[in-house]
Length: 241
Image 1 (cartoon, rainbow, N blue to C red):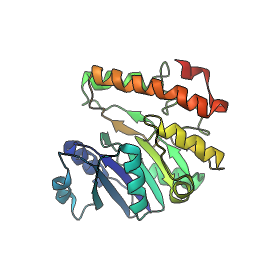
Image 2: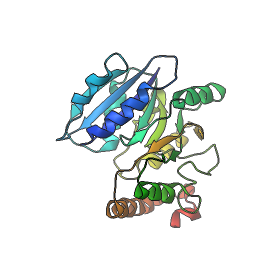
Image 3: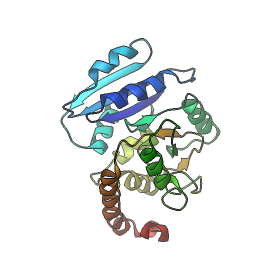
Image 4: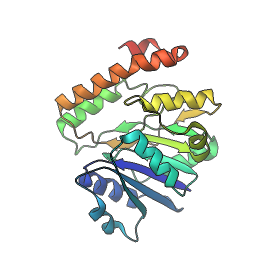
């Protein structure tokens, strides 16, 4: 069974949109949704009653410890044997889980990633930021736009991980940002395979302005030399950009 793992911090409106999209999935088998409130002061528990009878939801509140630790927390409590990790600012197409299930049935891996796209309803800033994060001119390859299907480093806004792989790897590490490529490389070193499922995309809203986007990308840039030092055998020229 699939378990969606969704950490959230002060964003009940986003959870409402995400849950609405999950309630519209065309997948014919049971799945669960695990929401981890990461020390929010604006909680989202009041939203969940809207989906009673529509979704199997588990809700947990914990002290703030960051997204990676919150994902680990949710995976430890989930009932499924395959976890799908989403950011709270994502919207899922109705055929998402059908594509995931079909791809894993055709060629099973213990970890996968999917791309992200923008909806027409997104603001101009959201569309521009989405393009800058997905274009082949920038980071599109490593985020699911053009990189090879195998040996893919999934990103945690749209990522699948088997229970077995989680238990052996202990999930996300302490580095943030950069916890997702760190996990992917550790999985490779443990003998697990990863892949890109191109059809399993999500709409990623990224509710940030240009200032917040700069801060986010700046943090990414500072994390990359640490990852390069830890895993020098996986360094690529494109990382320099």
